[in-house]
Amino acid sequence: MHLKILVTAGDGIGPEVTNEAVAVLNEIAQAGGHTFEFDHRRIGGVAIVQDGTPLPADTLAAALDSDAVLLGAVGGNEFNSLAPDKRPEAGLLQIRSALGGFANLRPAFAFKELAVNSPLRPEIIDGADILFVRELLGGLYFGKPREWDKTTGRAFNTMVYTRDEVARVARIAFDLARGRRKKLTSVDKANVLEVSQLWRATVIEVAAEFPDVALDHQYVDAMAMHLMNRPKDFDVVLTENLFGDILSDESGVITGSLGMLPSATIGGKVNLYEPVHGSAPDIAGKGLANPLGAIMTAALILRHSGGLEAEAAAIEAAVRKVLEQGFRTPDLLRGNKEGLTVLSTTEMGAKVRETVKVQLLAPSR
Ligand code: IPM
Ligand code: MG
Image (tube, rainbow, N blue to C red; front, side, top):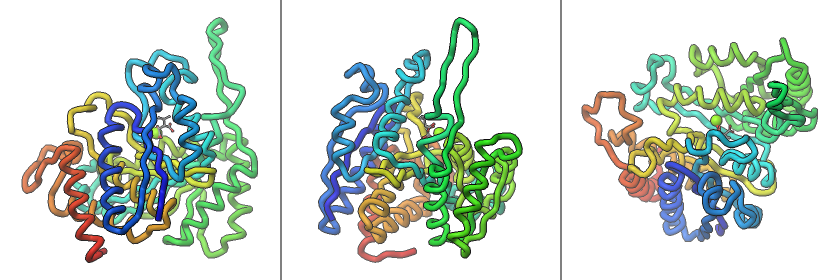
């Protein structure tokens, strides 16, 4: 398998964690005779500083010319006063839109070993395994008109979806549910918003194509609570853009850390892969960042762009083993270090690579 992967490491901890993801991919390439070709370009704050724009033209061209894009994180406190279209995040939204992927898959898996990190009781989260499918190109993020009129002191955004935009992401979610526990929960606010009424009606229409998948609907406010009370009841969770942004961060409580969440965006010209966590400027450059979200994102590249399921599973199993063996980055400690070994970002990466090698030779779980 040959893959041309563009790495846009971005800001804060982005470069540190993507380095480890790339190193794991190199390990997989070497072991299996695959060739992964990496190109590196700027995006976000680092691009604003060096190129004067959050998404330089050469980054976009290289992205469109690749098989997959691996993004670290964007954003930094020094850009907080900029207008939305000038900020590092604008670079991310532009590249999402240009690559065209509309289905953002955010798996949230509760590793048993990390249950102690969650404020939720272990029996509530143990075994939770949710796949969020977040619509990524519509809703408030891209809806027009949008404006902050400083003279009148009035600002607005537009939450807009078409039937086709809902149907295409719903189909992907139903299809993924078929390969899992065959349950789909669609999230909306249909008791208040017309756009949610369209969402719900469209999801019900699409459901007719998937009679083997059980569908239910939840209002987003209730869903925020159900996720904390009974996360094990959910399999695939389908949401519009902003609701998915919010609920996927909330799922960091189920996994014990936001640093454990990978994502893959599919359905467009080029798939885009990014961990769910942000740039964490407070810990950047200190070797404290947890690379496991980025490493599991690398596994998603293998699964969704390379068709290398065994290799993707080997990475995921290696992450599990490393946790079972008591290795933790500092974000995965909650006070109690007993029986645990604290590793830096690069040490954790090395530990996963070592374990991946063993997994590839003798796969377990
Ligand atoms: C995410 C992030 C982004 C989003 C930001 C950085 C623009 O929070 O991927 O969840 O809101 O989509
Ligand atoms: Mg977010």
